[in-house]
Image 1 (spheres, rainbow, N blue to C red):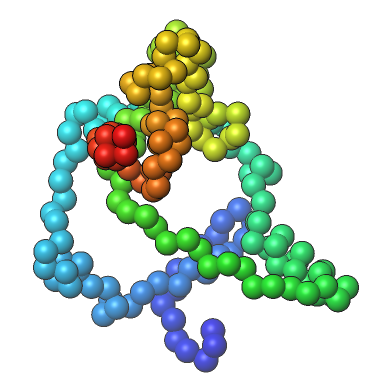
Image 2 (image 1 turned 60 degrees about the vertical axis):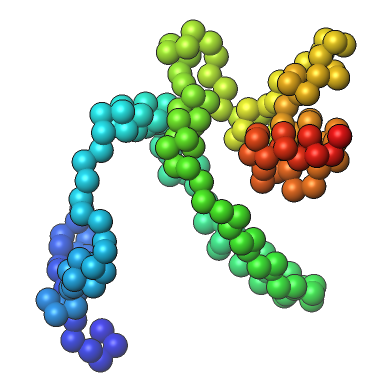
Length: 183
């Protein structure tokens, strides 16, 4: 292979012979020697294990490989076709930078609650809003007496009504402070 010597594993799978390249012994390093402050293996708590099982059960679906497509290959083929007919091809915008850390346990808890099966709650499971973005739709309050009340509006409605900048990244408390300063 490319004029070099490789360590490989040759396996018979179905009606094929497959060749898997392996690492030489001197290429394998102990992560604890390379990164001294690497945490040791920890055991999950019973609550974490329970939540993990609930999340897996809630999100488990039948898998059909025909449902998935190589979108990268499809985009490249579309670009090649566009270039072949003489259309201008522009570079894609760079990916957006991440906005910050997320509390993983809170995200898992919220995901389990959103995806809870109907047999657990006695209701129909709802995992996305009508836009398909994966978040439940905000509840609208229709009572006239509730319209002026800050407590009855959602976080987004409060911020929109007050014209608060940067509202999507604020916590409820930060939003309350910003709204208090604005009034």
